[in-house]
Length: 354
Figure (cartoon, rainbow, N blue to C red):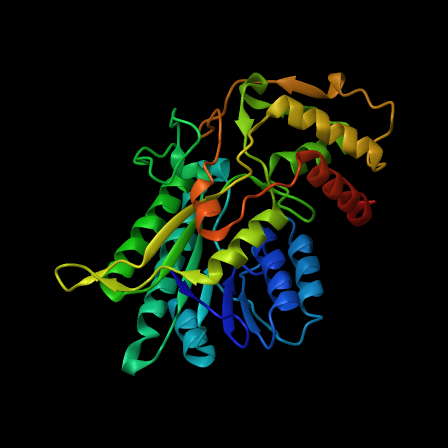
C-alpha cells in the first residue's frame, strides 16, 4: 500500500451534507492540517432537508470548507469542479440510499448511483491528463446490501455476490465493478467500503431506529419485519468515519503484472461492527434509552405500540461483517457498544426535536 499524506491536500467529498459525509468532513477538518475540503451535495428531499442544513451549518464554521450545491449526475459540473480544485483525494459518498425506496423509485438510483459514480470515475481518469499527478486515491461507499441473501456468514469480501435482491444492491455492486474496470484501465487507486447498517446522532430518518423513534413519539405502532427474526450488524457512525479516514491514507499500490500491463490498484473492505444484534433486542435497548433521555415517558406502553409483521421485499435476514481484512491492513475494528451509540442518538434526538 502507498501512504497518502492528507495534510495540505484538497479532498473532495460527495454527499457532504449526508449522514456519513458530514461526519467525515467534520473529522477531516478537525484532524488534518492545512486541508481544503470541497463538499458537493444536491440537498434532495428524500428525507427532512433540515437535517442536512443543520449538518452543513456546523461545517460552515470552518473556512477551509467549500460547499457546492449540485448533482454528481451533472457531468459538466463534476468536470468543472475537478478542473478548478484538482482534488488529490476523492471520497464518493453521494448516493440514493434505501432498499425499499428503490422498489418504487428506481430512476433516482440509476441517476445518482450509476451515472453520478460514472462521472466521478471519468473525472478521476482525466485528472491524469497532460502528465498531471491527479487523484491519488478514490474511496467510495458500497454497501452490505450487495451480499443479498447469502447464507454464509460472516460476510467476506471474498464471497461471490452476483445475486442482489434489490435495485439498490445492484447499483452498489455495479459501483464496485466500474471502479475495478477504471482501476485496471486507467491505473486509478481505488478502495470500496461496504458499510453495515450505520446509525447515530443526526442520522437518516428512513433508518429503522430513527423511524421507530418518530412513530413511538407520535403514539403510532412500529412494525418489526420478519417477526423480529433478523439480525443486523449495527455500526456507529464514528466507527465508520474512523475507518474511512484510515483507508483514505493508504491507497492500493500501482504495480505491473507479468504481462507488463498495470494490475488494478483496487481494494475492497467491510466496515461493520462484527457483532450482529437481534432486531427485538435492538428495539428493547432503543426504547430504554429513549425513556432515559426523556424522549418518551417512563410509563410508555411499548407492547401496545409494536407489531410483528412478515418480511418486506428486498429485506435480508442477517447482516454480519467479516472485518479481518480491515483489522489486518489498518489495525482498526469498529467497537462502539450498541447501547452507547443509541444513548447518544436519544440525547441528540431530544435536543434537536424537543
